[in-house]
Amino acid sequence: MAAIKTIGVLTSGGDAPGMNAAIRAVTRSAIFNGFKVKGIYRGYKGLVDDEIVDLQTQSVSGIMHHGGTILKTARCKEFMTVEGRKQAYENMKKHDIDALVVIGGDGSLSGAQQFAKEFDIPIVGIPGTIDNDLSGTDHTIGYDTALNTIMWCVDRIRDTASSHERLFIIEVMGRESSFLALNGAIASGAEAAIIPEMASKVDQLSELIQSGFRKSKNSSIALVAESPVTGGAMGVAERVKKEFPQYNVRVTILGHLQRGGSPTAQDRILASRMGAAAIDALMEGQRNIMIGDDDEKMIYVPFSKAIRHTKTIDTELLDVLHRLSI
Image (cartoon, rainbow, N blue to C red; front, top):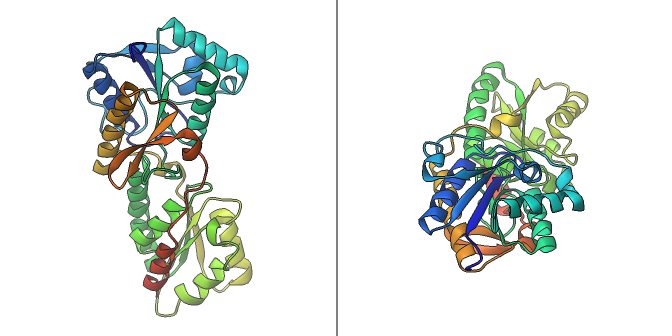
């Protein structure tokens, strides 16, 4: 551990509410323990382009309640090459950075895993993604805020749906993960969640029409996970128009509304705990691991497990949604 004197911190991939709280926690916990801290702007791109600055305690004052990330984030094709990663490593040495804390999702941690392997760098990851799709952790930073944003939006759409007796198809983010769609549907009282995990087992649209959109209701709302498997909200709406033309259907794609906004208390607390735990991990000699949340306890998860895409939804929640949608 004597070799680590300076720790670099960066945010990568899609932004998520709570990333600033994580940056704050990493910075202050590191300084508290006697380390110097370097902030790396625009993720791996900043590491390649040498956008690296000193961070002090005051550098992270007043940022906790802001969404997004003060360190910015950007895509970096150069980092996907051996030459780009070598340049990033040279810039780390130039600034005397001995270890990295990477805040991001599966793509960011995959990059961290490759980088650590090639140059023998101690790297600790913090799961920052609204998708909640990283294995080894109950929750990722930003997920709770995004879920609350979806609930807030659907509550307002419900007013219009009821007034006009319409079927609303609402698309939410999640790519290959349906946590936002399923839990968003339960939290907002939606009649259905159309998700890729169930596509091969049941015709979710027909099930919605037959059991959800009934004469006893003057409106119905279905949340759809953005995915080639589900066809997204537009694909589902086209099916309704062709197969069930008697229904008045409308589409809302929430898009990047889900990414922004002030983080919830849960995300601020989770980010703060994970940021502090990342510094503890480095002090313990840990490397190539992600900080995870296991039943409210901070744990260390190997990168290889975190990015394995084995995290699955709880099918019992589908039953709950089905029973409550009558």
